[in-house]
Amino acid sequence: MASDISRVLAENYRPEWTLRVVQPDPAPAADRALLGDMDEEQLVAACLAGEREAFDIIVERHRRTVYHLCYRFVGNHEDASDLSQDVFVRAFKGLGRFRGHSSLGTWLYRIGVNVCLNRVSVKRPATEPIDARPHVDERAPDAAVELMRGERAAEVRAAIAQLPKKQRATVILRVYHELSHEEIAGILGSSVGAVKANFFHALGNLKRLLT
Amino acid sequence: MTQLSDEEIIAALREVDVPEPSPLFWDHLSQRVRDAVADEPLPPRGWSSRFNLAWAAGILGATVAVALAVVVTIHYAGPAGGNQAALSPANRAQAGDSLHASEDDASWAVMGDLASQMDFEQAAEAGLIATPGSADRALGQLSQDEQRAAVELLQREIKNSRKL
Image (tube, rainbow over all chains, first blue to last red; front, side, top):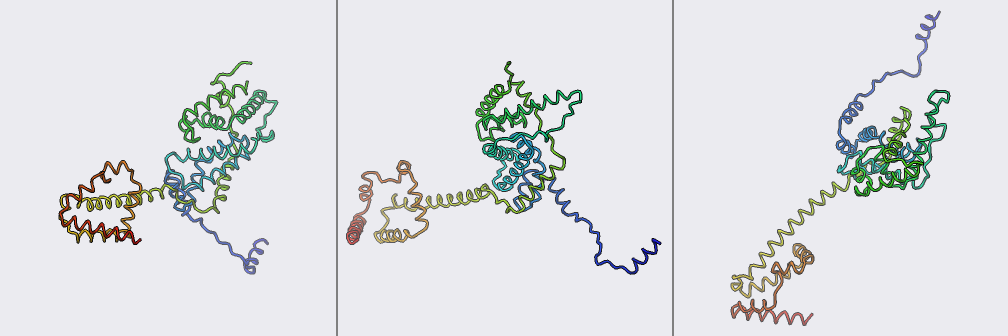
């Protein structure tokens, strides 16, 4: 019966559409692989020469670091996500001004810190809403420890948010991104001495805020 | 309440992690950036490349100016030496004409620019400033015919200046 229906349909019914299987073009994948092998300088040059895909690779390589930096400043995913996008858009627009005197990562840090400091100066840093935090099962044996850790983390974030801008940037870059004083000085446009002084004062303020 | 040490503060800071977003977030972020820059014009080449071109043009210009200055200095310094007496009044008049003609010359404008930027003390050290009595000494080195021609030239110039 079923075979009869199939045969009748096949003989009498001609659909208006046709199905065509298209193999994906291997060229873009090959280009992407080629771009993926490039170093930062070559990627920047390729981007300036008009290959927008080169910028995708730059984003891919630095997105995690940029997101983490932004999150440290604003303390919540939504703002960190928006700021990360902003950092990369500004980087794209200013790519022609990248002189290669520092690494691309350092240059992105510089843009990131400026973008974040501008944001936090106009918007009070918001912490993660309670329901966005990882769920803690209060019946678990180490639930109390987890809760305490969560509260402590919130205290630390709040304390960092109260620091003056340069001190905050210095603490974030030094403690969380483990950059040297010299690198931080390059990013913030300060002297090494000023960076050391900022870090010293930041620790003093954090001691006062966290005890 | 005990005061925490620097090490304890840093340890407390390091305990605070950034919550790991969804694995899909990273591609989502890349896509957002891609969409955001899609409408942006390609980034212009930076000032560094233009700066290099400007430098190259500047160096070329400076080289030409220096070469010109050397040639002109040698050319005008020559008659002040021992051969000055050999110049006839006719040649001097011709030199005067060429001097007027050179006012419209671009190379003369370059020399004018260079001279305007020259420090007075540097010029004096280079011997480009007439010292007191140097004009008398120069006239004393001329022959009688040349002195007569020089007087005629001066009188003519004085007459011309009165007409103006």
